[in-house]
Length: 234
Length: 239
Image 1 (cartoon, one colour):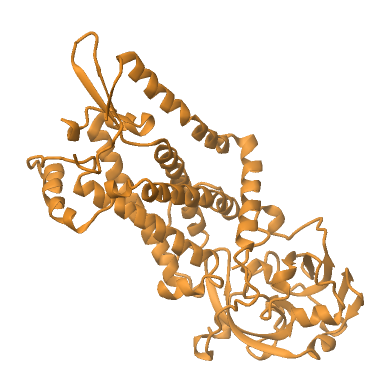
Image 2 (image 1 turned 90 degrees about the vertical axis):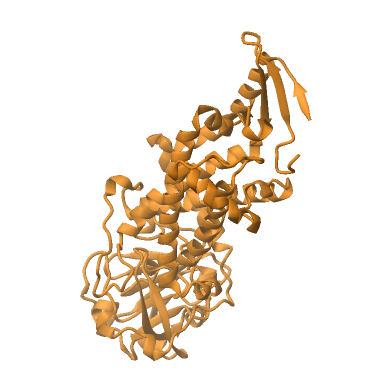
């Protein structure tokens, strides 16, 4: 059996239909808790971050100021700059803590390989994308995450790490000046931080579309941990 | 490893797993208006503590070449009230009080008699813009020595001619680049930039760089923290 397949599996027979059901424990508690806490934190960080951005909606100098994009205040939280900073400074720690616990757990439990995109996944990306977006035939699945999913989740983990590193430079460019140099300076760190937010929004859009397409059983597995009759068990 | 169960058992197992997640709902407390303010204040206090752990006295703010400094006209003038609070420069004295051996009034000449330091550093506004300027003045640390400050006290609290006020933690005040700034661009401070003396602290966010200083107090106890800080901005905000 593929080593990336969950080890905890239960099976039962439906008393009414007599059909056998198998369920795999796909998402351990730590992963589910981190997933939900982190997603709330991410949404708060984006919404409050946009309010912070509105205090100076530019990536250029103060004099003269050329505004970039004005985002409707209704899409932001915090009300004013000080309020938005309170939200941002509070939730960034929830975001970092759950991110570190999640990645740490994934490494420790050796589950990271389930979602880690590795070179041999490259050739599987196109067939999967063709299936999703161009009505191509569905490639056979032997593990919980297909190559496209692995690409998406590995990217999300990387985005998470980069969002924290760029954020640290914005928060404390003196103490993290070495990171600032890697990012091309304080101004570029702000640009990167913003671009990473946009990349997260794209990920989120794709993620939610996939959740809807894959239906209730798949969604509920992020709450119960158990997925009924996953494809790789059939 | 496949565990045979009954359908009821399977349901129970899954229900229990959902219940284990219930503490996540506690985050919803942030949505309750009466709790929100307390939670965010606590969150900010934790953040300030955590951010202060990054501070290293030996870690200097980047300094820049004269070519990277913005022209003086492009250095923004930022204040909460008026550009020029009408300080009587000839009669100006800085009132020093609190946990110091030599309290009293200090003249600009006494501050200028301390070793002068000039540095091109980045001034960063909480709004998100920043500017590289040229600042000159005496080290806050040298001034604290002059007034016999107890440097084990926690805070340096300053008040300004426009009723602005702010607080600097002692570790930051003692940082070698923290200045009692009386010069910008090698010329005496203009009124709009805080004449005769302002703070220039390149390890702190802009609103900590108070202008037109009138008094300085060394203390362990703060009844108020700062004009912006008391409205909900970070009281530490080291950068």
